[in-house]
Image (cartoon, rainbow, N blue to C red):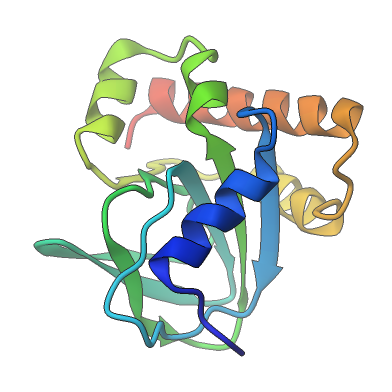
Length: 165
C-alpha cells in the first residue's frame, strides 16, 4: 500500500469534491501511517468494526473504540499510531462547503472547527447498518446518491450533536 504525501491527499480531496460539495467514502482495514502526519480540508467521520485505533493529533492521542462514530476536521495534522484487532474502518469525507450548509448546532460546529475530536456518546444498531451501507455504496458517486449520502451523514451528525459526545 502506498501512502499519499500531504499534497497528494489534499489534491485527492479536491478531485473528489469537483464542485466543492458532497461526500465520499473509503472502506478498508486500518493500518499504521508511515508519514509523520497528513491533512486534508474535509470533515472526516470514521466508524470501526471489530477493531480500535489510536489517532495522534498535535498534542494528544485519541483512542477510537469499535462501533463509535468519530468526527474531526481533518485540516489538523493527524495519523493512526495504533490499531488493535483485525477489523475494518469506513471513512466518510465531507467537503467543508457541504458541512457549512447543514445548519448543525452552533456549539457542535464550534467545537469541531476548534480542533476537537468528537466521539459519539451513544450507539445503536442503526449505526452498524449505516456504516455498512456507506461501505457497500462507496463507489456510487452519481448526484442523487451523493445527496442521499449527505442527508444520511447530516442526520447522524445532528443526532450525535443532540445526544452528546
